[in-house]
Length: 623
Image 1 (cartoon, rainbow, N blue to C red):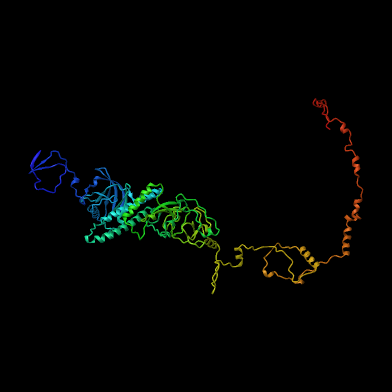
Image 2 (cartoon, helix red, strand yellow; image 1 turned 60 degrees about the vertical axis):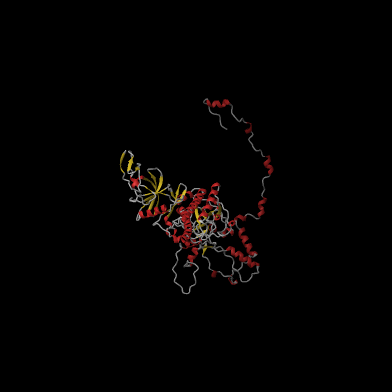
């Protein structure tokens, strides 16, 4: 033990590390064994009241988020082995911004489960300013929600309710500590997920002081600003979770729900699997058209969204919102089904895109928990990437042949030529194959007219409106266009119509026989014109009637025929029948076979006669 004059005589405000000093009067007794003090013990932090950590004692694991002028990493403290989150500032005025955020947390002595807890700061001399926050930040809440929305409905609703509860509790806490909402933009807020909790992180440019004289007005304005921040953060987080299904980050949702202000029983219960099924609301279906059959659902045509619905008249306090949603979350966890009503989307559609099999499930949450519901929609919104056809939905023109407007349920199809939409039942297009192109009737007519060139025509003064775009010159082109034959078959030569009635039967009979005796020689004739056919024929143009032959004339013909050799030897036709015929009795007395020896002779030779032929003798004669 070494005793010497005390060097701490009259000293004050000093700190001792390692060895223990015993001050006795003017002497100081120092222990023999002593460890040298650590280099970190002499560091001065950017703010007082927090432990100073050297950057070499931190091991970075992974970058979690990149904000405006800072990055957040998950890290490990080498001395304690704990996993923490470190916020590293970069860019212009990095040290000033880091110091402002640290002073705000330390001076307000903030300690809340949904607010970042500062446990260490960087040294004042450090070239890289940073803050060490308690807990491990897994990812942003919108990323966690987007992954949950790809799974089941129950998990998505659970995370959605937890997000609303955490935001309401955290912002209500900041409001009680007079957070300067009016001077901080929404872009300075980021919500992280840390071991099942939601952490509301924020960044301050400069520390804001509130005067005592402005506390009353500041408290009132702060309450309104906190509620406005709450609604904006809910909108932003939920929309960011669904941004992968939209062309731009900003999702345009315009609600024209006609039943928003009506009693609860006006909403219709709906099953998710029937949201895009039969829809007999089109005029063609009511006027005898074919019933719309349920098309096969696409496996990737259904998805889920989280939607926050705020009203300008909302006056519910943040504390009441957190209490109501906490009770709803407890009820939801204890039940097997989602603790919300299921409804069908009723707001007027502002797009005509309607793909069969599309189904969007919106988990709609609002400050009034009686309006919370699971709403099913069968039509996408503008700017959305349709899961069925993979096209970006636009506010297209709806011009169906039925004349009615589009609705939320009837499936539609877009013309590939004019991009106008029609009800599928009205145009009888029931194909669910995306490769089948549909062309409306008007475009079909226009495309058909383009195959026939238009003939130039000089302009005419005072000409009326043209009814057709195609003009045919000469008239034979018109006949060819409509398929009128150029060569007609032979026209039947019927007796012409007489101007005066003929009462003589002999004349009528003679004319008819004359017509039958005349044979046409040509096989084809041109089509007669209307002027070539006369309705009446004068009696002078009629052919003379035939007169019957007299009896002497007929006798002369008979004499000529009788002089023929075939008839000359025949005095009478019946003379042939006078020749004698053989009597039938002669056939009965005549024997059938006259050779009696035929039946008495042997039919076969003896065997000896046959073998005699084999021994060299002659063969027996053959009969």
